[in-house]
Length: 271
Image (cartoon, rainbow, N blue to C red; front, side):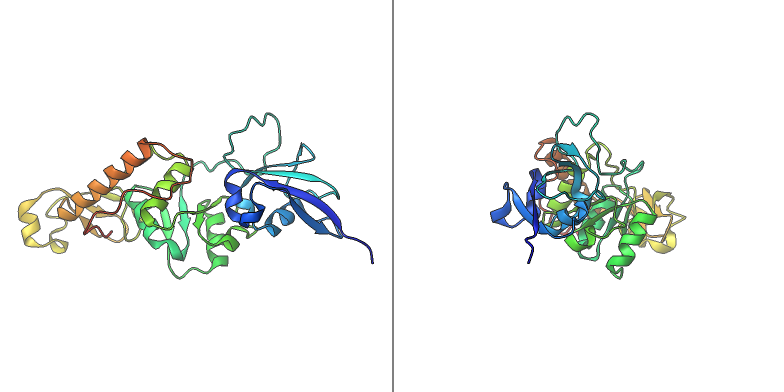
């Protein structure tokens, strides 16, 4: 019986998050009889292709579709690795012209917080993996998930595995990962349906707002999609406090996309 071929892969920076502890920061042996595509070898180690930005095979840049030669040394770098790659071939497509998100069913709270921050965020809890991946690709959205298998789907070109577990920390990590600190536009999207908000008069929202509210404020916003009405009450002030705390956390800096903690959501805050 013939012996299998072997190649060696090493992953850098945040890609080690997907590896077993004993494999992190080390060369990993990958055995095969028929040379696989580089993408298949990488994902066999547990790293989704959507997280990969640059591949070197024996020091030469390679594409996902290239075949893995026996005895090769493969270096795999994340999307935003701080490298001077010059004319080397990047495996990632060009950044999307507009930052928009699609969020999987397990990250509903994150979806609401992204909408609170003003980002176009598609979320429904009844999407299956195939449908969500197809929709994210068709509408050119960045897919956010904690499901590694979802990021390995072939049609996913722009995606990210959300490392943090608390929604507040997830929000901070996404904003850092995609350099969105200066693009926040709080209170411009509906938390319920993702529609854009616009100003409305007390008369226009009279049927949707309690009389005591109409008597105490004249500042209203209404969703162009579902018609939900917002006004600056106690709940609004709690949301303001949260947004300000997030902005302070972002200004304090930190590792790109590595936030594990963030300001707690204020008591009574529930978008």
